[in-house]
Image (cartoon, rainbow, N blue to C red; front, side, top):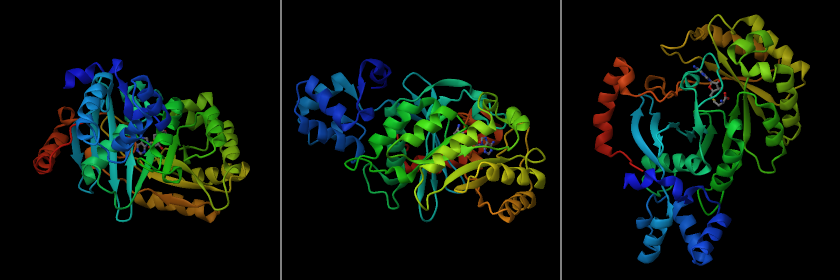
Length: 385
Ligand code: SAH
């Protein structure tokens, strides 16, 4: 079966088609519209991975679909479960590129963090994904399939998700460098006959691709926005996030202001700030950040402080918990809302900035961990797309 999937470029990946496109495709293969609706529901509502499971279709149609199309192009290569319950799925595309998706449960809600690209073209100095380099963009279908695979693994194929699902585009890649596929995927996932994940439950995070922030702001139904800032000072931000040389802070915050103007009453947006010990976490730097927000009159911005997630290959250390607290207090004393993001899944390379297709072969400590996890996980059954 996998050989066939490898030929996927010739087959239409139906998971990435909107309902209208499915209707068109079914027209092309001489099938009526209601069949397209059935298949859309089969893929996105019942979350079926194989056409053969769509037993409401005649067998002849299932065979025809298998010849002309595919419903599955990703394969789960391995799965890791953290002591905090976070799960990381290391998947492969049919042409062999890594994709990582993370499931983050809390008591009240589930969040799925998906990848918009395989690898990343940006060279943020504190991020492990940067070390992969850029491999390729995810198609809309590959973005959607990540979510389906995770939901099926956690809840069983097609079962209800008790808390609904929140999505964050914070996995591998820079979402705004794959803007069209991202927006297409989110649009399809928002369909009420399918996954029904409304834009209000989605957050897209960008390292600061300024023109795309304007495009995003202009969308009619759009998700929440987060902007990775990590420094209020161009000289330092140039070093930490080289994309800053292309779009420096003032241009970035002007775009953020344009976005802010489109928010309705009570809506907010986020700046992410990775706290790097001794680099960008001093009280003065917190003041500098508050000054910057004041200068741009950004009143609906909140700051998510992300303690740095360390890795052997990265030259940074996390700020001390005391300094994280002080940084937050300085911001609050200036009237800026700030929240500390609890790191999740650090032990399995699933936390922010740790996605680098890490598998057991790359670290001894990690291999030991995987062995413990895999016995338990194998018992539950590993999903193979
Ligand atoms: N490329 C997008 C989407 C990735 S989101 C972006 O940069 O916004 C991942 C978030 O994790 C970003 O805010 C990024 O700044 C942050 N991050 C990267 N490396 C990190 C690390 N090692 N520890 C903590 N956060 C990190």
